[in-house]
Image 1 (cartoon, rainbow, N blue to C red):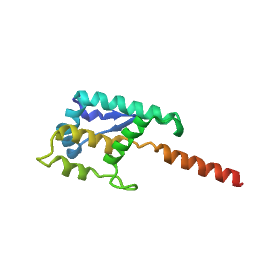
Image 2 (image 1 turned 45 degrees about the horizontal axis):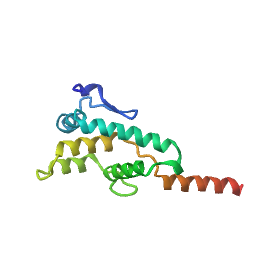
Image 3 (image 1 turned 180 degrees about the horizontal axis):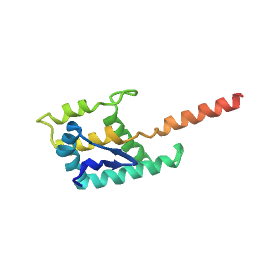
Length: 138
């Protein structure tokens, strides 16, 4: 993959660079290296696996999918309600002591920019219980 002007698609979302110099820099030095690596292939398989597991419903999500989702969630979010900004990742990847900065940078940029976090099984169950309680209360 080399022509980022057309955008990078992941799980139905596309990140377009257009004329944005900073996005092009993210792509040139991190995303392109990650996307063209064997780790990227595993990541895409894992994303499909997590999405498939979460489609089964809250009670049937495999613990491995929950663990992957939690790992990515910690990359995307600083706290429960606040997502990490691309500036935070810029600071992280520019640290010269960081090993595998291209891999980590590419993965972090993709997760923060494109990945939509599914609800954790516990959150799904709580929301389902709230809806049921409201419906029974009518």
